[in-house]
Amino acid sequence: MKVKIHREGRNILTVLFLALLIINGLLYRFCPIHVLIIILHIASALFFLLVLNFFRSPRRHFPGEQRNAVVAPADGVVVVTEEVVENEYFHDKRLQVSIFMNLVNVHANWTPVNGTVTHVSHQDGRYMAAWLPKSSTENERSTIVIKAENGQEILMRQIAGALARRIVTYAEPGESCQIDEHIGFIKFGSRVDLFLPLDAEIMVKLNEKTVGNLTQVARLRP
Image 1: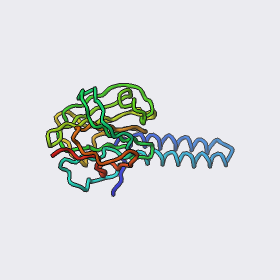
Image 2: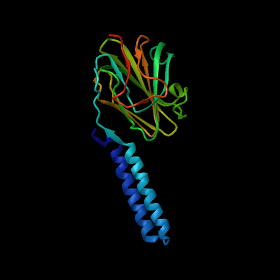
Image 3: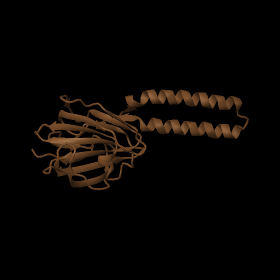
Image 4: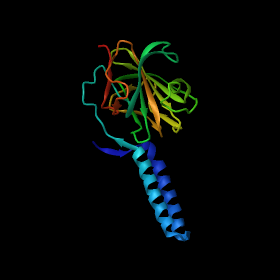
């Protein structure tokens, strides 16, 4: 599996590297306490590696049959699998599958199904912890609706968390989308919700770990 740096992180990493280089250079030049300098150098290196790890972008290809498959749009842990009423777009009952991402997960988001994007919107909101149920409807979020190849619509919602302050969405209405493609990115901790038809077969359980674009979370009706 090849890993590269996601395009969302390139500018951030460049600025961070230069800033840390300048700060550590000034410390080395003017700080008289050598032990403190060494500690700060190590801390700076570890911090940069943490941010570098956050923006990694592995190349993944879904190994299964794509027809009617719904794949995990993100790395993380399943925190919701239940029937709910989705009131922002469908206004009816749907099956909800939610995946919570922590700071060490890959934060690129993959397209969950093959189909055509029919709706994209963004809602401002709060920044409460993303694992809380209310975060799905009260936090800042982006909503993407895709008409799958079988004619059914599924909704994917990118949700900001307590630390996440930027949601990036690449999807545009009218565009075709495919499994294996990136559909967006959420910076620094967050959650992704899927709202599926009631007749979809859920294939994951609560607390199960998912791997974006590799774990199949559901199967749509043929």
